[in-house]
Image (cartoon, rainbow, N blue to C red; front, side, top):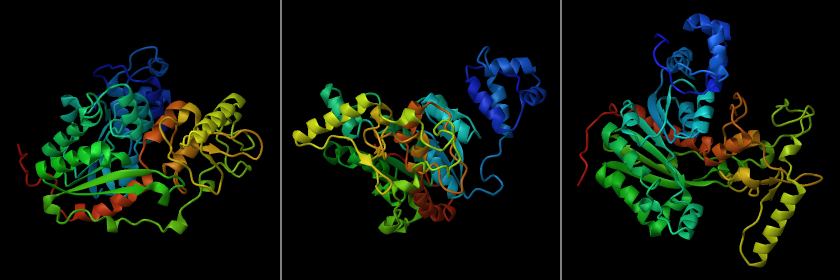
Amino acid sequence: MSPRKRTENISGSELRQLRQSLGLTQKKLAEIADYSVQEIGRWERGEIRIRESVRQYLLTLRVPRGSHQRANFTFIDLFAGIGGFRKGFEAAGGRCVFTSEWNTFSQTTYTANFGDHQVFGDITLDANKQQIPDHDVLLAGFPCQPFSIAGVSKKNSLGRKHGFECETQGTLFFDIEEIIAERRPKAFVLENVKNLASHDGGRTFDVIKRTLTDKLGYRLSWKILDARAFVPQHRERVFIVGTRGDLGEPFDWSEVELPPPERAPKLSSILHPENGTEDPEPRFLDASGEVLSKYVLTDNLWTYLKGYAAKHQAAGNGFGFGLVGPDDISRTLSARYYKDGSEILVRRAKGNPRRLTPRECARLMGFDRPGQPPFKIVVSDTQAYKQFGNSVSVPVVEVIANALVPRLTAAAPSRGLRIESMA
């Protein structure tokens, strides 16, 4: 592959991360790509335009995780975020063959942690859809704002439409429908907020189910799962599993292995011990292993949050902060955590509470697990909080994948009998 083809505005830091992940110096990259060291340095500093073909060339040198073994099945990762679905299905023996994520910060994190192929942007664009190869499983945590309680309340207050009437995000489900209809994967797994099941009196969910069954001919099974069984966080999400008609009976949720409640972890399993036993990560910890002071709430913010909670408690509603310790479980980590951290505040022996660090958020969402390399956090704290708050819980996805895989490996090839759409 020749790296001399075209140029495009891509990130210099992205190029640097790819080069470093391959163990290449600028000099070595210059030799294999046939450019000068000076030019590569200027690319990485953002001084001149980078040749996209060089980045693609580097991607071909990367060895995807698990590539030493033959993949049992293939999947595509839509609305991919930072790869929570991918981590779960890779652990079950799958290989990702296509990724789409529109947010550039999430693309950066995804590429830093996987980086074995191009991350496409807006999946609503026909040009991107045309790049999708045949695959066994379609994965999509499609945007949930039109269906979430918070999203509906905000849109109602602004007099704006929501659900399938939302002009921007409410129709993204139909892009998934189009891809399923065209590619006919053996199965799909969709994820959304719990409120999807009850939105608009259940009518929104009914449209989704009828589209997937009556129109596309898939056998459907869905369930609301709480990540509490795997991580110390209440996080209820609806998962929809569809299997093609030739795969037999619908997906059976009784085959999903959930740990017994008594084995559910507490926050101590994800918090920094702060006793010097953890290798210090300078971005989050000081030399003695204690969490940096920047994560401790200021006096003004702590006073405000206490006053806000007291006001709403007096009014008889449940608004307020969530104060937790090592023996507790947390509320749901949300994408707004970067604002004040109020839903999960860690109690300290002395002084104001603190936010979780992004590293603790990675553990809380199952991206960081014992015995595995730490997930790479290459964006700002603000972006990291948004990314983890928007993600799926990795161990929940993994157990779903483990239950689904036996059906995939015993089924016919992916592009099987095409069921024509009903008018």
